[in-house]
Length: 205
Image (tube, rainbow, N blue to C red; front, side):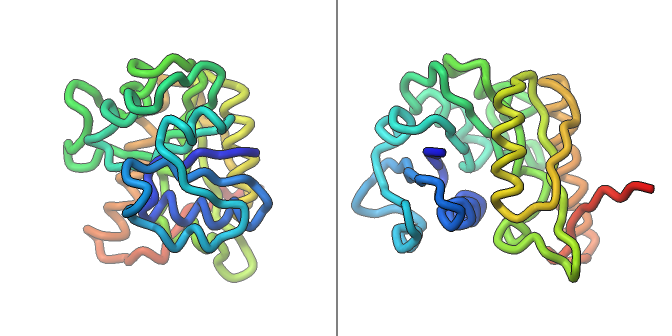
């Protein structure tokens, strides 16, 4: 797959690295080609840097991994997203998000042409994206959205990032639930002192 990554910080950088190692073509979409966070990502295979609109134009998949308050601004900066799948990995934390929205995915839907927007890669820390393995098991991820094609792509990319499974939890009406789940992890890791080296696993019997 050809994946445009908008936001080259911790989350975007971790996923760019994992996916590049799996053979995907990674296009880092940035505002300033000469100076941007995550320049070391260009040392990965199959990775190039382009303007945001050029990266989106050349890609079939777009990952948004910028700060949540910028969701509307970033969505409007993407250019023509017709036919693109957008994966939203952002979270509104402590009410810091796009004005008038309770979740970032809806803000993206309202400000882009595509209807194929899903929320995934938002429910755990970037350290778990760098390494989702705990002992002899790997962590799980979750995805929400009305787009069946978007969810299928996100689930495939979750496996390529090393996660054991990526469970479908429902449609667009579950976007806010996904962000609440993310805050549950943040609460445990940060506010309750468990530390970042924790993760979620769905067990069955």
